[in-house]
Amino acid sequence: MVYGFWKQLKKPIFALAPMADVTDAAFRFIIAKYGKFIRPDGTTGGGPDVIWTEFVSSDGLCSEGREVLLHNLRFDKSERPIVAQFFGATPEHFYKCALLARELGFDGIDINMGCPEKNVVKQGAGAALIKNPALAKRIIAETKRGAGPLPVSVKTRIGFDAKEELLWIPALLEAEPACIIVHGRTKKEMSIPPADWEAIGRAAELAKNFSSSSGRTLIMGNGDVIDLKDAAEKAARYGLDGVMIGRGIFGNPWFFRNADVF
Ligand SMILES: Cc1cc2nc3c(=O)[nH]c(=O)nc-3n(C[C@H](O)[C@H](O)[C@H](O)COP(=O)(O)O)c2cc1C
Image 1 (spheres, helix red, strand yellow):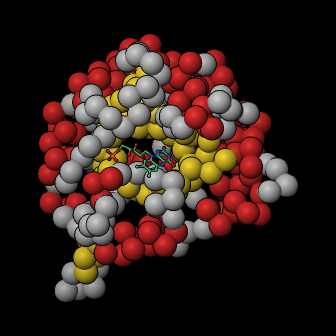
Image 2 (cartoon, rainbow, N blue to C red):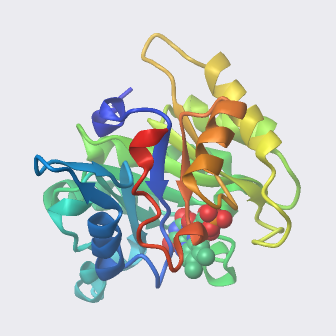
């Protein structure tokens, strides 16, 4: 298991979620800056433990249109550790994108297996991979092959039409990603009902029982978290390594300031 930066993080881990058309380089720069505070001795505290880019098409990055997409992979060193997220359904393209992420200096690579949008799902990408575990595993394997020393994670949901975390999460665990981020809704549910944190807790339990001699996949929960106290409580209650926060940060660039308290 390649853990890279993940092993250096204090738990519970707090992550800034990828949000297309929201968490661009400018937004992330603001979160990295105002999410931290400066101590009297000049050192900084607080801040997200890890930041994601918006998702970027692996097919697009392997096409002639590549140049147009590259600006989505720009980042500032203040955002580190930073993870590049890709979506697609072609294992070879994930291999090439993993090489690209290394070349650009990313700290980790994430595979989107949760996007419910029609135009993504119809490509067999995003949440559609929940219905195709064999392809999902090949994608993880190819990404790892290109990633070398960089850790590879997967961000997903608890099912496609129905909750199926008891089958889906073990399929992912077999491919040994460093971390799985579980959004507690199915694809069908989009963002409508409350996230099912009991299901996220079951995913964490599965990962604990799955640990091998090479280590254990970390599990982060995601969905409807409103502040860091809520995040820390959920991490403790559901046995998670960390929590990812998306919409909770809207209008509040100081969201992660108290991260050291928990
Ligand atoms: C505007 C918007 C864009 C999103 N884009 C992405 C994306 O690019 N990749 C991804 O994995 N999830 C994406 N998501 C899902 C979020 O990362 C997160 O899983 C979801 O919002 C639930 O978490 P929250 O309740 O903390 O917001 C997006 C969500 C929103 C609201």
